[in-house]
Length: 163
Image 1 (cartoon, helix red, strand yellow):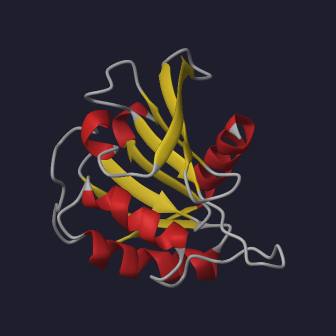
Image 2 (cartoon, one colour):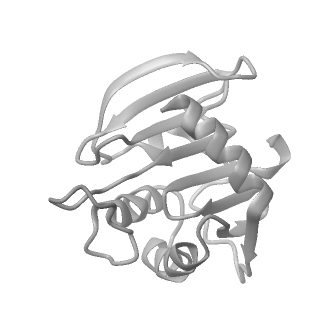
């Protein structure tokens, strides 16, 4: 999963399509791990080093197969990156796209956003359908130094100044 996130991150950064952000709805100017993970269905916490040697805290996402969540940054109260992959499958093993609010991955996206922005439902409703349509390109807004983007399978909240 870690290799998939790294490859996914590289591809998504190169293909990102910005979404105009009119105001700053951020709850905080920092990416505080303790705030971001509140209420999320995460299990199996692991602490490792990222590819650049920074602290990386990873979890499995309970309720989504082959999915994972991680926060990278030596200062977990002011992290550099929050990223996750979320995959949901139907009974036949076919991938379910998170273009509807009733899918697990869409709901998980909103839960994460609730811990980061003031209007999570509006942001998800704006960017998720665009991300599903434009996959594998990414879409998302930028608020000051914080960028939120996704291709509907991989999700990132990053500090632009630390990319």
